[in-house]
Length: 309
View 1: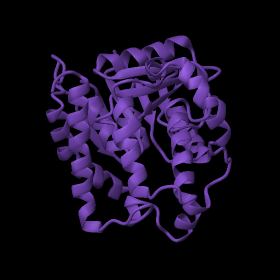
View 2: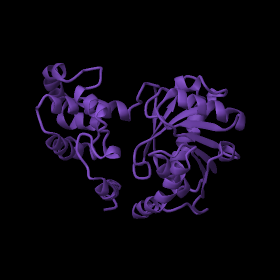
View 3: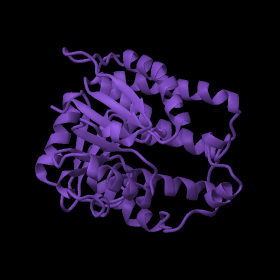
């Protein structure tokens, strides 16, 4: 099993990924160009560890791994058996990272991208050993959500996929192997299909944003947390699905561009929690409490779904 990993990029997902790997017994060296990002990540570890404690996620018998931080890329990847790239969703930025780490790592080192949807095949064009490159898409917040997508590009070796899949299982998480390298993989394709319809319904005045969230969270969301979409088809009946989809599919939103309501908010600087407003408005001082409450609820739901009450 992999014992040492390098994490490149400490954005939104970085601290949670580092903490969860360490709790699984892996020594992690986390890198970022920004000293501010490093300090922010360090400050978050106590809270993240508290969440992992509430989830009863214990370190393996050999003990928890360590987390070290560095602003030196060569120090980050030195001795690593796995390098996880977690930089912004821009293929040029990612390509620069791969070119920088390429001469610093041995051919046996696996490079995994936490991209949310850029096809792995496109990323492989920028690394010298594409057989050892794979997608490892965590879901936010990564220390709470146990599912991780594993995606092979056209040149990824089967043993690279199996190594990452087995690593995910070994640290107590749930690997999902995506069989085709499609943009967005599976989780985000399903999510963005839902978001497209949700935004369209709000924009057309069919429903208010608050009511839409209530409808989804306490309607389909409540069910899908227990009964997945394929099982839900069987529960409802495929004949019922046929009848409803025969008229509803043609009326669903199928726009390929960005909805004007979202574009307008972006142009106004309303980006969501990070700016204090997006689809909703937030008081800056209340955001940490909101995030803490959401984490608490996600922990409670996960414990129930795992049968631990």
